[in-house]
Image (cartoon, rainbow, N blue to C red; front, top):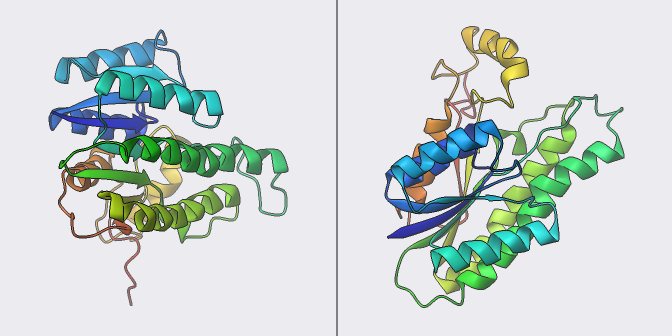
Length: 254
C-alpha cells in the first residue's frame, strides 16, 4: 500500500492529483481549507473514497502553524508512514493589481500560503519521513508554475512565490537525498481550473493565436499524470528536477 498527503486537494489541480494517486492505489490524506461539510467537498470526498475507501479528508490551513501540525499529526497517525507529499495548495492574489499598486497585504497573503506555508509544512513532514525505516521509494513533489520564470506584472506576488518554491525544491532535494527522499517540481502552464476561470477567454484567445505548440488549455489530469509518474519513481535517479506541464509554452521558437 502506498500513501500520500496532498494539499489543496479538493479542487482544481489538487483534485486531479489526489484522484490520480487514488486510482494508482494510494491511500490519500487529502487536505483543504474548506470544511468537510461544504457541499463541494462532500462530493469530492465521496468520489475519492469510491476509488480509495481508506483515504480521508483533513480541513487545515497550511499558512498557520496549528494547521500544519494537524496535517502532520493526523496524517501520520492514520497512514502510519507517508511515501509521498504533494505540495499543491496555493492561492492567487485576491485582486490582480499592477506591480506599482500591489499591496503589502496581498504580498503577505500570497507568499504566506504559497511559499512560507508550503516550506514549513515540508519541513515538518520531512522531519517525520526521515524517521521512517523503509526501502520504499519516497518523494516530495511541489506544484509550482511556469510563473516562476514568466513575468506577469499584475500578479507579481504570485510569480515571486512560485520562484521561491523553485529554490525550496533545490534546497530540499539537496538536504533529503541522503535520507532516500527525492524532491521534484511540476510546473503547470495554463490549466483549466477555477483559478483561471476569470481569464479563460483571454487565455483561449492567446492559444488560438498560436501561444502554445500543443494548442489547447491543459487539464488537471495532465498535471496529475506527471505527479503520479514522479511519485511512483519514474525518475528515481533524478532529484531537484522541474518538469514543465505547459503545452510547450517554455520552448524557445523562431
